[in-house]
Image (cartoon, rainbow, N blue to C red; front, side):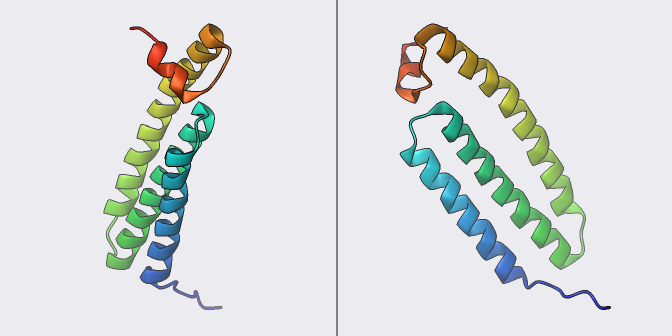
Length: 104
């Protein structure tokens, strides 16, 4: 059985569609959790593009960049969880507009 190669253009198209879905989610949603999920979709789309490009040129650089994106996503989740808990505790709402009322 032979492996079927997916053209780079198809993978980049899927990555672009995922990035646009995440971008629209960031622009439209007012809930912090949906906003963070949209950012995760955008980061995964970038990671998909890096891995596809690295596979196309036979270099491990795309996978290394994806590991960096995963580390960035883990750090974002840690900070975002603290922010979500603080918003819920203080305002009993996860609306992003109430975040402007938080003082450092």
